[in-house]
Structures are given as C-alpha cells and as structure tokens.
Length: 413
Image 1: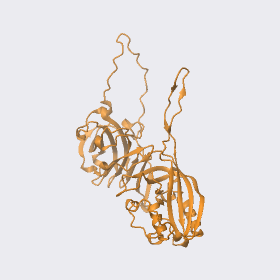
Image 2 (image 1 turned 90 degrees about the vertical axis):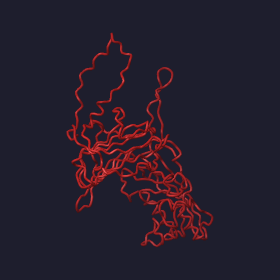
Image 3 (image 1 turned 45 degrees about the vertical axis):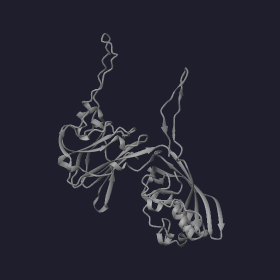
Image 4 (image 1 turned 135 degrees about the horizontal axis):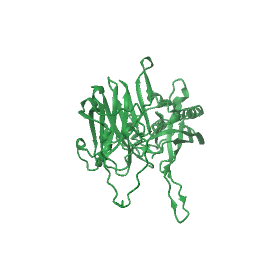
C-alpha cells in the first residue's frame, strides 16, 4: 500500500498530490510530485489552494486553516503483514495438534508531514488531524469506520488500485516527532496508528455483478424453497460390515423452527444472476454484499440462494440439489425500505421511512437454509456462482430491485 492517500470515516486525511500542489505554490516544497493520478481517481478537479478548493480541513471561521497546506504521506506500516497465527498444542508423543488458525486485528501506522505556513497553522493542523481521526463524520461509533487507500499510485478511475478496511478506529493519536522551521513555512513530521477490528483488506466489487435486477420481471415458479436441501443425497461409505451394522442412534428431538420463519410451497418471482469461474480471482476469497429496494409493497419471504457452478453452465438450468451452498432468508421487509446484508462487515441493516423523522434503521432477522442459523458465506475459490433471488409474487412490487456484489479480499497487501 502507498502512504500517499488515506480516507478515514468519509474524511480525506492524507493526500500527497493535494499537499504537494499547495506546498509548491508556497515554495515550501518545489521538487515533489506525489501520485499525480490521485485527483482523477477521487473525482477532484485540479488543485489550486486550500481556500479555493475548500480543502477538507478548511474552515472559514478559522483563518489559520487557510495556511495549512495539507498532509503528505511518508510511510505506512501494517498492510504488508498477515495477522494470521495459530497456537499448536503439543501431543504426548511426537508432534503437535496444529489448532485453528485465526486472524487478530490489524494495526496500521502512518508517518506523515504536516505542511503549514506558520505556528498558528501548525497548531490548527494538529487540532484538525486529531479531530478527523475520531472518525465521527460517518457515525462509526464502537463498530469503527471505513479506511480507503490505494495499493499503488492510481491510474484512470483508480478502481483497480483502491482498497478498503472496515471496523477501523484510532489506536494512538497523532504525535509530532520533528518540526523544521524554514523561511517559506514549517514542515512537521507526525505519526498515528489505526486499528482495524476486521483484518481483511477488501478490493472493489467484481465489475461483472454491479447491475441491478428488477425482481418483478423474474419468472413465476411455484415451489417449496426448503425441499432442495432434502433432495441432496450424499454417497454412503463402503466400509460398513453387513454382519455388524452400525447401532441405531438414539432418538433426537427435532430442532425447533422459529415461528416467524415461513414454510411450505408458494408462488415466487425467480431471478438468476450468473458469475463465471473465469470472472473470479483465482487466489482471493470473495464475500457477498446484498442490496435490495423493496419498492411500493412490503416484501415477504425473500430468499437469496447461492449455487456452486464450476462448469459455468447456464444458471437457469442449474438443478443439482447438492450444488446449493447456502441461503440468506428474510421473512419480511417493509415497503419503501432499503436492505443491505454486508459480508465485508458481517452486518445487516434495513433503512425505512420514519415519517417526520426522515428515516430509521433496524437490524433484520436473517435465517439460513431451512430456517437454521445464518452463517456468513465465503467463496474461497473460483468455482463459479449462480445467485438465485426468490420473493413471493404477491408481495413483489413492480419497482422492487436487488443486486448481489462479490467483493474479493486478502489478509495482506
């Protein structure tokens, strides 16, 4: 990862391209041209000065903010190190039981330059940096905020180089390590450390799955969605001795199903989205992000089912019951609401109209296959995926729409 850009909690913290332009106009730095592709990648016009551009830190009520020329990245540490570890347990004999590997949180330390014209501007720069690193602009709270950065200096729109971390919060606030007074201004070096509760480094979603699907245009089918898992017949082992059969298992009480979980056959609208194996990165895991707008009707019995499709066959014809991987099932969503089930943060949220209060957010109940506990799906290899979206036809509005994104991730970068 490069140290030249960082956006934390919806606020640009580091932008070496911006800082170099402002500093060069003040003759504070004259031979620096850091990552000239950043403005285009973040949809900024050419930089002029902090006041004209209304730089992220500029405050008309604080005159010295106009003499703060920006934050330039010097170094970043923490991305090129995996957080995976395990603690083997020694056996009584030779060797050990490896144990389960787990990933701890990720710590990222930035070293930056604060470029200012005078001491008052330096004081403000520290105040602003400390406040901006609280991540409050997007209301991250205890769950942390999002950190955006680039793997290399971006070209074009920067989507290929853009990376994201989630659940990020300030671990160690900014500290000055050196201050140099020059005739043209002041160059101060500082460090700060962020901690990411979610250690994964996420790319942009795969571009082949960015289109919305109108749910009302799906094919009409009548079925019981839970039956598919009962139809999967696993091959039996061949070592059972017919003269010594395995004893019958004791009676087990059936697992209770939530009373709010809908069952039985119904008429659904069925939409299918296909992702071919060649469209998935070969060495990167991917997680899904479901986005849905219910439209003018309250939507009932939403089912998003993932099917393995290693041969890349027509997804409308995929019928192997053992190819069904997992479900996201939601019994009810109110009209004119927006749903997001985010595999990156492993959070689900519904935003709906709250009248005079504008909007309200709630956490929906998610069910897995056959009403079981929901487990966040992870696609660890490029098997190809068919994504089936089912919703009861009577409750599917004409303007209901959905899309499922697949987001590649890595634990080092």
